[in-house]
Image (cartoon, rainbow, N blue to C red):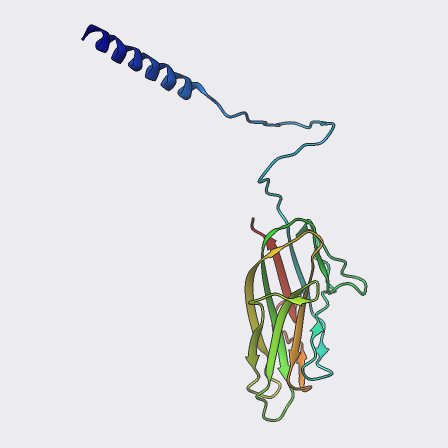
Amino acid sequence: MVQLKLFYIFLLMLLGVALVMASTMTVPILKVTEDAEIGGNITAENVYLPAYIFCHTNSTMTIASAGVWYNISFDRSPFDNVERINHTYNDGTNSTFTILDAGVYRITWTLSFKDVAASPSNAIISRVVSNGNEIVGSVFEKDSTKQNALGTMTHSILTSLNSGDKIQLQITSDATTVSLGTECTYGEHCDSATISIHKIS
């Protein structure tokens, strides 16, 4: 009986030591509060690096051939609204956004369009492609309903992208009377298309 009591006391002592050790354990944290120079390679898992861009254009673009997909060019500078996504707005590649970091991205876009047909009922379709391949879930369609009336479409998707992926926003229609364009009653920047690409994880 005495031996059993001593055994229980020993177990309680071991448990107490374990609890004390657990309560005093800390996870190493590196905190830099001032400028620092670090040589060599630094590696870590699950590091989140912000990546985003917002671009817009006020260009007008006609649908020259029905059913043909056309890349939308974003020829307006993003100014400071860009981080770790490459885009050149002032040359022939201004329809392309190059992803630098793999992750899950939210892509949101808005288009304005017109149809000059007398009694329009034509489809206007947009989509996003990655390396020339349609991203599933990105196809979005609206119909024109009134001659020369400004129509708009907005769509947003989540998709996984890899480093080096090239993203483009495209538009097509089943009629050549449709064009990408805009009108502006008020405001200083009348845009026919905008796009936002934002890494969320």
